[in-house]
Structures are given as structure tokens and as C-alpha cells.
Length: 159
Image 1 (tube, rainbow, N blue to C red):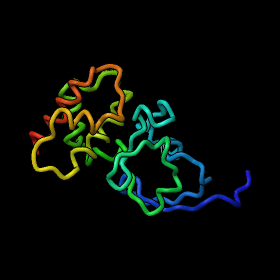
Image 2 (image 1 turned 120 degrees about the vertical axis):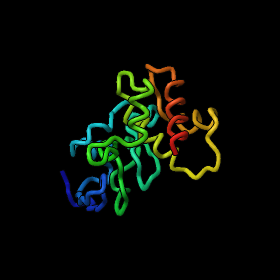
Image 3 (image 1 turned 180 degrees about the vertical axis):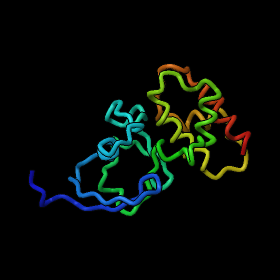
Image 4 (image 1 turned 45 degrees about the vertical axis):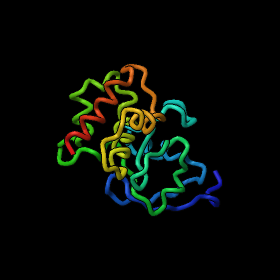
């Protein structure tokens, strides 16, 4: 491989500093998975399913479409960074309590998308339509979505 065109980037992943030298064409999902962050699922690889959703500076992105070169200077959060001190995040806790976790393939992406949705400034609880729209990029083949919507509502009730 010709390494002359590679780029060096620095970022934080789940709060820890990293430096990478990589091809500018490397998808973020590939970089994260190659470093053991296996919650970042490889589903469709075209940005349709949301299984690879991570937060980049607090914004939910499909990491299969997001180039790793773009994370220079940014904060990346994956599901592995959500539990603190062995304690699940509020969103993770609600997903386990509500039954919204079925086979688990889509769950990491949904947890991250829900976390980003709930972090958006809002003065009143989200409507069901707003929740569905906010999570529209994340597909789930098991739950029928109502349990996921109920989970977001439960998270808001605890705020």
C-alpha cells in the first residue's frame, strides 16, 4: 500500500485520547471495530439500517458512511462508553427494563440514537411522532418499534 496519501488524526473515543494514521477512505465503523469496539455493528454498509450509529460530538451518525478522517479533533462515543463505573446509562437501563432489547443487533445503534435524541433541547416531552421521526434511521426487525418508543418516553419521564 502507498502510505504517502495517509492522514494522521487525533480524537477522543469514549473519553480516551487516540491518534491514528489511516487511509482517508477508511469508514469510521471499520476503524472503531478494528479497535475492539464491537457494539458498532456492520449491517447494511450504506447508511440505511442505523446499526452502526455512534455519536460524533454528540450527534448521531451512521459510522459506515462517516469517514474516519473526519473525526480529527472530535469526541466519539460508542455504546462501550455509555456505562460509567459499571453502571448502565439511563437509556441503557430503560432499554433493558422495557423489553425493547430483542435479538440485540440493532440495540447499540438505537441506544446511541436515543441518547442523541434525548440530548436535543426540548421544553416538553417528545410526541410519539417526533420520537419515530428522530429514530427513523434505525431499523429493528424484532420489536415492532412500540417498545422502543415506550423506552424513549420512559427516559423522558425520569428527567
